[in-house]
Image (cartoon, rainbow, N blue to C red; front, side):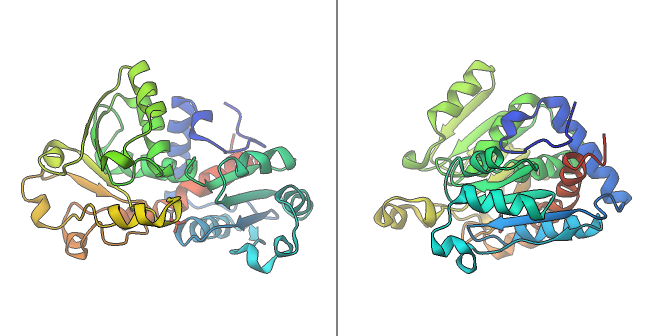
Length: 304
Ligand code: CP
């Protein structure tokens, strides 16, 4: 297992053992913070809005006693003057030790990794991948359920454009889950993921209805219908309020059902659900810090 100088672009690049190793390091760092990034600089390059990913990467770097120099919006950079992504990355790599990039275009993180001699971490590229979100999602499931194997997991909402669900389904395929995919027909899980699940003999069902599909689940992973991913705004208007979880929706679910959401939410989970024992989405967001600490320390070669 070699992590030093490695790019983190897709969850497909991680074996099952590597995933479990990252989670173990995250747990160690959560319990015992260490100054593993002292003297190192991380560059968050965010070409698309973010609250959790950007701030938790920064918090993780600061907890490791490293420094941060990047941007939260390309509007205040020379991208506005026409600079290419390639040239931006070629420049930033001269100033820093690690690049974290979020970009609206699929493949942008891979391109950045080709341009950079320093490690690049994908913080979300279009509808494609969000591997660090997946690792923190796995960490959250692992902590709350005591393991990752043989779980019944429902994924609800925009399964077509949702990069977090694409990465999560790929990673969980290592752990013999049973999936229930709940979405409007037009936003169903892409065939490429269903073929991957078939090839790995992972069971799944697809439905457009929340009930009774959620009643025997261990985890319900809710996603936002993402306005910014729809090529046609009229299509977005059709689906934007398709699902809303309320306390009433949860009246027959298992007592230990846990509800996750990568956030931000719009209206798909009613605030009244926050105070039930089911909601763990804010803990999930907090788990971004130890998981990103682990990844930073690993790619900087500070943990073998
Ligand atoms: N979960 C997530 O990626 O949130 P942000 O868009 O706020 O970073």
